[in-house]
Amino acid sequence: MSIEDPLVFRKEGLSHTVLTMSDGDICPPGVSFFDVRNLSSEDASTFLYQPGETVLITIVMPIIWAIGVISNSAFIFVVARIRRMRTVTNYYLLNLAVADIMFLCFAVGDKVGRYIASPVYNDQYGLKTAGCVLLNYFVQLSYYGSIFLVTLVTLEKYYAVCRPVQHRLMSGRKRTIRTVAAAWLLATAFAASLIPGWANWTPFCFLWPDFEKFDSLPNLVGYCLPHSDVFLSIGNGLQTIPFFVVMILNFLMYGLIIRAVNTRVAVRENQLASSAVRSIQMRNQVVRMLIINGVIFFICLAPYQCSSFAMMITAATENYLLSGDQVEKVMWTGRILSYINSAINPFVYTFVNPRYRHAFFEAFALCPSIKRHLVKKAKMDENGTSNISMDQSATMKRSETRKESTATTDSQVSQIFSASVVANDVAI
Image (cartoon, rainbow, N blue to C red; front, side, top):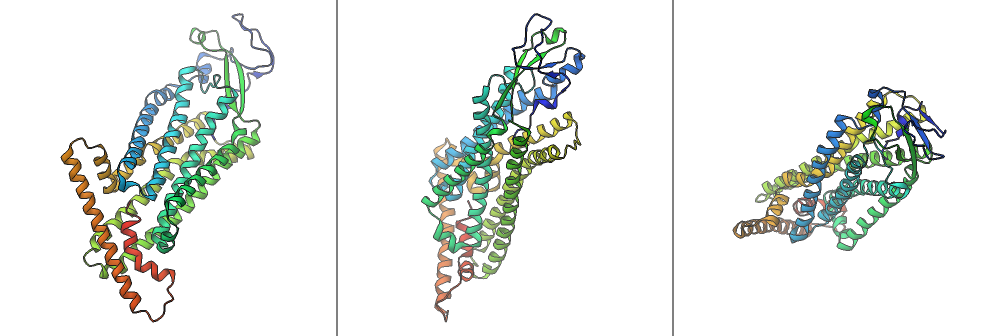
């Protein structure tokens, strides 16, 4: 939940009295107002966007938005155009790209739209109640969708490496579609549960000081507030606790995957004399991609979620350790990092994994000769992977012939399939 409660501003000017303004205008009946006429120009300016915030909103955030929308759209195009990229893992990543585009459009679009509509900080007067609900709902939907989809990617790789037989029995197009649909439904439920935390659209009337710089400012502003402080704390908990639970689960699975890949490739090196180097290279690509994707995702989102969790504890204990300005700086840092996270995933794929890089070049190659070369190279890579699988199948048959018992445990079959699983199921 976005912690942008306007009541962190000066409360001494807030009352429920209708007041005639100096220029003859009157605040609407029943509308609370901030009387800041007795403040200096500098103090009253704290209700406006500061220079640093202006730079972030007008320059930094649009750049991040453009990079993120273009890069994620390009990844979706590559998966749709290159047939070999239509894997289970990439189907999850494609949905993650959709979630990232949605997050950037609604989250960044909201900040830029507020700035364009009003010079008063966080003014949401034009949204009304319906706008407050829909805008924040889609931001939260994309947030939950991203953390659940990242977990599905990790879970898919965990089963492919650590439980290969079970993975092959379970994997399939229908199962993948059902799993993705379940992730989005779960994200929908979580996002809907947070609606009371921002559905209370509340107008306020500002009484500005009698300085020229405030003459053109709007008197009526609006904010999307929680129906009560309880809903704000509950919303922060529903946002942060699932994040930390998912982060712990993902890092546990990363550790198990890395350990399994290291152990099994080492065990099979003697039986894969001609393909050992290639298997190790694929193993290293998988490990790098797992670590980089996971670390970037959770590090970029952790500061904002830690801040939200701290705000929840602070509201419960009423022990305020930071000033309003300090809280805003921390929150802005968390926001920018979360926007960057949604923009850079396709760059991680292409920089870390050569097969993704070749697919991007192939999809956007304008020169026919370059495209033919990339297609030929991709086919050679696939043939090499197939040869590894054939070697493993032969090894499996020889191993089964020597068995005295027909009972085979899952762990034994996992060792037989290990290198082929590393090459086929995890490389992309």
